[in-house]
Amino acid sequence: NEYVSAPFLETDQLRIVVPKLCEPSVKQYSGYFNIAKDKHMFFWFFESRGSPSNDPLVLWLNGGPGASATGLLFELGPCSIASEGRTTTRNPHSWKNHANIIFLDQPVDVGFSHADPGGSVKGCAEAAQDVYTFLQMFLEQFPEYANLPFHVAGESFGGIYVPNIASVIWRANQALVVSPKPGSTSINLTSMILANGRPPVTTIPSIVDYVCTGPYPLYDDPEGPECTKLRSSISTCQRLIKICNLYTTELTCGYASSYCRSRLFEPSMRSDLNWYDLRKKCEAADRPEHCYEQTPWVETWMNNPKVKAALGVDPDRSFRSFNMDMNREFNTRGEGVRNAAKLLPELINDGVRLLVYAGKADMMANYMGNERWVVNLDTKFKSQFSAAEGVPWSPAGSNEVAGEVRSASGLAGAGGITFVTVFEAGHMVAHDQPAAALDLFTRWIRNVPLA
Image (cartoon, rainbow, N blue to C red):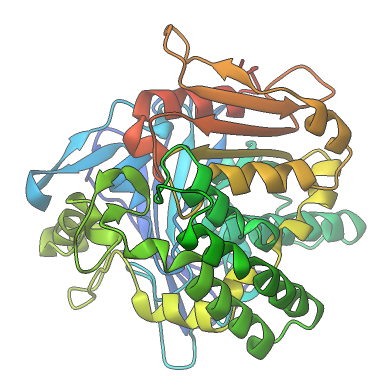
């Protein structure tokens, strides 16, 4: 294995190997970024199938909190898990058709990433700083990608990770303009992509509208006892969320998170459906992760000794697709009810573009709530976006309508702020509608109108 150190981060170390997995013909790197010797972040990078020197650099993050970068093997990576985890197959609809992509297991203790005692991440703000440090080291080691347009993309709880990470990058870039730092790179932050991102706290009550009056209602009567009981808890949930964001402590935010989850989400989570795709049945005891048969396949393949050796992972390191301990810890601290959306307006007003898309069948990060918070985002595009009508979107070369696009720009292109509802898709759009998702992603990074 190759070990390198950057001169401006004396306690940090990057360990790199060159695996020949997944798609051996394409340049790839994997390894660990060691932060202050007690945090060890695992990444897997793939160069674009198209034009690596011109295509953008994309950071992909799964959510959770506690889900690792299984998006690589299950959604948009160069290969897809197959044969119960014994092998992989080439993914023709991978986003790396047109982008260089970093898949990162973060925060530490997710996937192959791990922390020494005392090194665990305490929340999204600290996790964002770790990701920024990783990016600096990555671009120091691979300067050929340093000037490319950079997009940070996240799914599910990534809707909270991405604003935090983008904000750290943007603020650091501002500081570098005022006071250049030898060895530090100004990252060419171009856009943020939220894929069925967890809606900001202001729209958490949208879950009630979705399960009572949405396209896949869980209850027969929108005015019946179940929906009436759900609605009766909305005002208290909103009040607790407001207190959390006025006095941000683990006590206030943890209680808000617990109350809103138990009163608004959990009653609907008792159904025998897949909460992430209400079109599908799921009676697995450990829902939702095992509502998809491929979830254990990913763990089987990643824990194969030959795979771990090729990736530069210690033989005794175990891979888990989902870290429930971290999930509970983040929820206990109320990370999910702290308003990450407030970080976005200054970035958007400075030219960083925002794409939010949501599969219509997803209950947990439903399209109604996602659209509402985008409408309410206080940016220079607010009035234009509020007045914008949704228009049909069909992938290039297809007559099929794949979704509906609502956008505001002021300039020609894919938009400064764009929201897309994706039809016939749940929480993982790139898994459910791979060709349409690739079309959406490609148009967005090339700044080509979506509709």
